[in-house]
Length: 217
Length: 217
DNA sequence: AGGATTGTTGGCCATGTGGCCAATAAAGAA
DNA sequence: TTCTTTATTGGCCACATGGCCAACAATCCT
Image 1 (cartoon, rainbow over the protein chains, first blue to last red):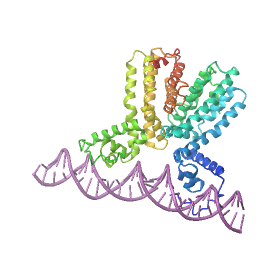
Image 2 (tube, helix red, strand yellow):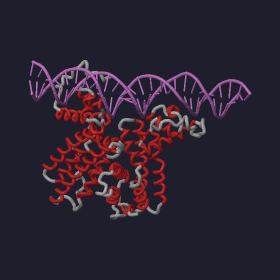
Image 3 (cartoon, chains in turn green, red, purple, brown):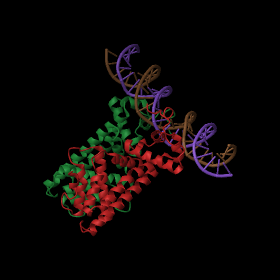
Image 4 (cartoon, rainbow over the protein chains, first blue to last red):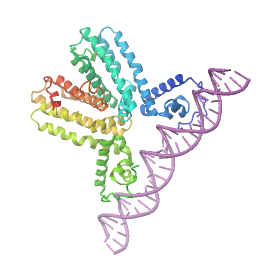
C-alpha cells in the first residue's frame, strides 16, 4: 500500500552518480533501514524504495542480497561503536573508559543496535557472508576491548588477568544482555544493565558499583 | 524437488485421528522440524510434508502460523530441559546438580537447542505469540535455576546471595554463551563452555574449577 | 558536436509463503 | 443399515521476495 512513489515523485535525486558514490549511498540506506526496521527489511525493493530508485539498480551493485545484508550490518554496527571506544580512550583512566563503554552499549534507550545484532546472529546461521561479517565485527570488538583491559592493567586499575579470554567472557555476557534487553524479559524484575556491570567488577577486582554507577544518571 | 509424495505414497498413516491426537501429532512434528531445520522451517507446508498430510489440515488446527511456531518452540525446549533439572535434583548436592545442568546445557555437541533459542529470540521481536512463549519459557527456566540456588544455600555450598537476581544474571551469561557457541566465533581461541562456569564459580564463591570440571570428560 | 560507455530503468519470471474454501470421505449415531 | 457429523483433502488467491534482462539516457571521451 506504499509501494508506488517513483512515478508521482521524481524523487528529486541527482541521477547517474559515480559507482563509488552510488554504492556508498546504497550501503548507508541499507544500514539505516536495518537499524529502523530490522535486517530483514534489507531487500532489493526495500532499499530501492528508501533510496527512490529502481530495485534493479541495487541489484546492479549487489548481485546477491546476502552481500548487501552483510554490508548493511557492518556499516550499521561499526559506525558509532568505534567512536565509543575512541571516546573511552580519551577519558581519564581505564575504569572511566570502561564505564563509558558500558553506559553507551547497554543503554536502555530505543534499541536499534540490539535488534540489528540479534538479526545478524540469526541470519549468520544460514548466510555465510553475514556470518563472516558478524565474525569480523565481533573479533574487532574483542580487540578493542582487549586494548581497554590492557590499559587498565598498565594503570594498575584492574586485578591481574589474561585480557584475551576475559574479553571474550565479558563480550559473551554482554551479548547475553543484548538478548535479554531486546526481549524485555525480566523487565522490572532485575536491571539488566547492572548485570554486566556486576560481572565486570567481579572479574576485574573493582570495588562494588565502580562500574554500575554508570547507570545512576 | 521433494514436494511430491502424497499421491505416490499413501503415507501409510492412520487417517482421521481424534482432534486431540492430531493436534499433538502436529505439534511434535513442528517441534522436530524446528530442532532439525530451524524455527523458520515451521510452515504449513513444511509441517504437512513431514507429517504426510495436506497443508490445509495443519491450518485447520492452527489458523495462524504464529501459534504453531510458538507451540513448536515451547514443545521443543521444555521437553528435555525440565528432565535435566529433575536429574540435577536427584544428584548428591547442589554443586553436582549445577555441574550437571551446565554440562547438558552448553554441550558442544550438535546444536539443536541453541539454534531454536536463537530463532525464537529473533522471531519474538516481531511475533507477539512467539514472544509470549519465549518469555514464559525463560521465566520457567529462571524459576528452576532459583530452586537450585536455594538448595545450594540451604546446603551451605554457595556463598550467600539473593537467588532471584543472580539467577537472571547467570541466565543472561548463559544466553550469551548460546549466541557465541551457535556462531562458532572464537572457536579455538577460548573455550566458550568454560565462560559460564567461571562466572558461576565467581558468583557463588566456589573454588576454581568446581564447575568447570564438568567439561573435562 | 557526435559517439561510445555505462549508470539506470521498468518489467518479467519462478518460487515460497499465509490464508481460505468447497468438496470428499471416514467415523460415529440413529 | 442409513444418516449426520466433521476430519481431511486439493486447489485457489494475493503477496513478497530474489534474480535477471533488454531498452533507455545521462555522462564522458574523442
